Structure formats: structure tokens, C-alpha cells
Image 1 (spheres, helix red, strand yellow):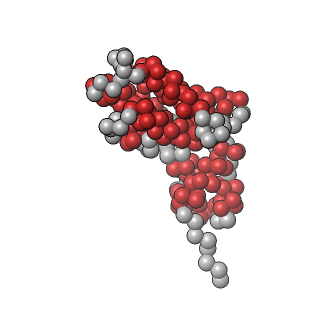
Image 2 (tube, rainbow, N blue to C red):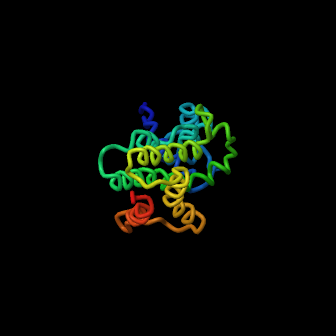
Image 3 (tube, rainbow, N blue to C red):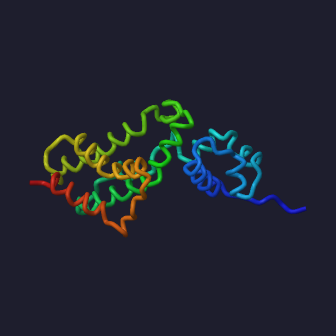
Length: 196
């Protein structure tokens, strides 16, 4: 008798994400399992329920992976270079997550589930963290004076708006290699916040 196929959690989550984005929150666990070449019960045994699989696939209730990069900076390097790095890191997150927002809303996740153990909504924590980065840069004389919360809001909005627009219009967002949009956005943003 053949042994059941072993599938890594990362593979399951990647396929589940793709299935949820393609078909919505109502996609069956059987459809996800079929794409993986395993059984539906085996999939549920690993994650407990379809809702838990969905939450794991989109890291609901978890700290966004880019926050630690922002919390650690800025460092001693040229600030515009760091601003570009931060933008690219946040951009990668939104490229993956914006298509998921509609799925998560359809799934009926509660605000408490979104918050997770942190008890602070991820968008509020993101804004506070980026504002802290700008505040620390100002304290070191690396940015002009101004409200760091406004700077953070403009910076985050500049990064994520094209993903929301693409999602609403069902259009793809080109890669940074194909269209260096972030490079241009950071350049324009820098002109507004660079020290006088």
C-alpha cells in the first residue's frame, strides 16, 4: 500500500491562498485538497476547519512581516535608500494581501480575529509603526519638520492605492522591474520630506 503524500504547511497555505483568491471564501476544502493531491479530511485534520485554514493562509491575527523592518530603523545609511527599502518591503505585502481583503470580508471574520493577540487592528499598528520611523528620522535631523503621522499616512497610501485600484478594476499591477513605479513614488515623496 502506497504511503499518503506528505505536503508541507507552506505548500498548503500557498495553494489555499490561490484557491481562496480565485474562487472566494466559499471554495470547498475538497477543491483545495484536490489541487494539492491530498484528501479533504487530511487537510482539515492539519488546520481544524476551513476558517482556520483561511486565517492561516492570509496570516490573520499575525503581525505583518514588514513591521519589524520598520521598527528597527532608520539606521545610519542614506535615508532615501532606506525609504526605498521600506517601500519595497511594504509593497510586497500589499501585492499579496489586497486581493485577499475581499475574501476575508466574505468569510465574515470579526474585528477580534483580525486583531489577533495584539488587540490593536493591524492598520492602526502599521500607521503607528511607520509614523515612529519618520519621527525617529526627524529626531536625527534626517527629515524636515512635519507631522510624522501625516507623512506615514501619505507614504502608506502611496504604496497601497494602486493595489486597491487594480483590485477594483480587475487589472494587474506590473512588477517593479517592468515599471519602476515605487522608485518614482519614493523620489517624489522624498522631495517633500527631505531636510531643507
